[in-house]
Amino acid sequence: MKELAHKHRRFGLPRVHYFLHREGLVKNLKRSRRIYRSLGLQLNRRKRRTKSAAIVRVPRPKAESINEVWSFDFVMDRTEGGRRLKCLTVVDDFSKRSPGILVDYTITSNDLIQYFDSLETLPRGLRCDNGPEMSSKEFLDWAYRRGIEVEYIEPGKPIQNAYVESFNSRFREECLNEHVFMDLDEARKRVDSWRKYYNEERPHTAIEFMTPMEFEEQFKKPI
Image (tube, rainbow, N blue to C red; front, side, top):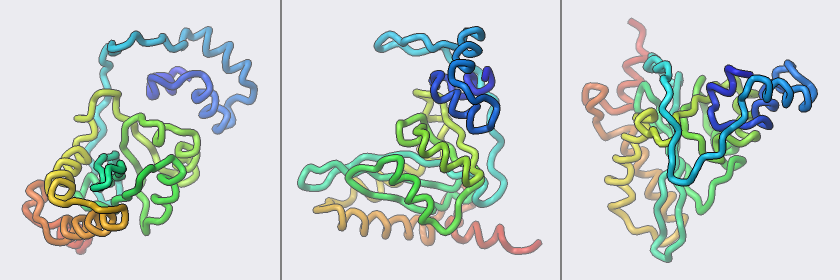
């Protein structure tokens, strides 16, 4: 329980109990509550505009293979008619390839799950922030069933998700800021076209000016 509370700093008793119950370690919420209180793990209500002290995190080793870790995040834009567009961006930390970008007016945790399930391949790990879509019980249960480890970055620390932050910067500068979207259908077409360009034509400095697809093909070749 202390390990879970340390890993998920803003998860209260219900979510901590959910993890323990899922692993078969506890059955009764009342027992979890007694242990939770005896360990002094109750959350302190934060005052508005204040932040908790930073904690030391163990840096995760860099990915060393394709589909080892994917980072994902949300980027917002709008149509010419003023409707908000929500874009789910996904990038492979190792190859820099984008497995997909989901564009819709709204994206719920169930939409997130359905989209990942629609992809040909899934990673061994996912890195994201603590948004409600990513920290929902539905998403956590899906990741558990798929055997995917979910790593959450600390609140207010986007640098811990640097790969997708870098991707989002290119995505906004080269795609979102360059086009006017009349409707959702046009936005989806232009975004998917840019993603293919990014994967197959755009050289990336971090992988010796190869495209992500070229880098993956070279990595797959037997030595």
